[in-house]
Image: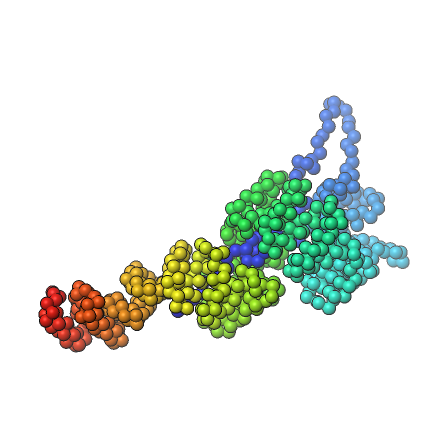
Length: 588
């Protein structure tokens, strides 16, 4: 009886929970576009009226050194239209477009360079590598690899092909490029990034720490190390390391966002959102959330799914966690079908993806009754729970519990849930699973206590909750509590009455069994309900005779029998009345 309460809970960075912590800039929304316009504004000098003043011409190097790529683009486009003779103008323009997040315009500029190349003269074929970088940023990995292969051998080409091979899951190509990596800082950072993307966070941390030991002034390495500790669920350590970078760059969007995600895991969404206020205050527009996809996405997570339908769908192909968080939103809304549409073609690569797909399949199988989907969900849960990297983690033990739950092996479920119970003291989802597992394993007292701790009214109104709680009451000799639950107007009242009637009869609670069978007979005058009512009435009579029940219960049962039209009623009532008269028991 009953269904499992799947707990998608919190999702995003670091597993099922949190925001996206790092991502490639979406084209057109580069971080540099958040620069304060006031800082870049030209303040006119005060001169006497009627006199001319010579305005200093902007210098490209100043724009680049200040990372003001938008300003560099304006200057270079002006010079381009004015046909001014600047060496490598198009290359600088492409460079500026790339760093501004306008990858398609950067590609166009590089194509113009190649088109204007004079045949027979030396052409810098490394431009193909630069174009490959643009394709990679646009998530066009095949085009990036094809373009890189046209470039001469170089460390940049090796790094590019290493990453495109990873994106295309080409292990053999990855091995080839891995062997070509050197000991330079760029190559080691590239290797660390691949380790991070493959969820080998400890290996990535080791590389970053070694590089930091060689160059203590490279503060950005602290952010990468903080990312790794975040992924390893050491949120407090991540925050401590992150402060070293934030002390130098307090308005870094990436660092502040990571700090907010850590606060989300350690505290709650409100605390996480509060950490983002410093970015909004430093933004020229005053609303940085509308300008940055990453922050928009995480704000949805921090606000527990608010505006998920408006924000997440456009980000599905840009921020990987957007798909997972939208799936969780649909699960919370009870729409397993829409959730399944998002994960049916998903090939899981990390534990959280395996877990989420398993949850969706299990939820959908409960709606459709598909044994095939149920079996696949069970296999996915087992795959994660039995893996060496997850077996001793909380999610890993939850997965093994869900695996055995689907197999209805409740004793095994409790082995895993009891080991993590201290971490879920007031969690409705955990108490649902734990309570039903206890009841399924005949540990009714503990099951009742867990189910009564659930506060979510939606959960409490479900048939599975009411039926299991009723069974716990009956098995713990509290049939009156089960009866009260049945007469409160549940949508599944007939099914609940049947459960109470049969369980009470089984446990010898004949009085409440008789009342339940009587109500069932009134609702549906079926012969089987009369049989149950008659036998329960005789059970009450027997207990009154034995002195285990008071006579008023027999009086009430006699009246209940009067509501039936079966010819046996009068005969049974006469026997009861005869016994009462002989033993001077008043039934009138």
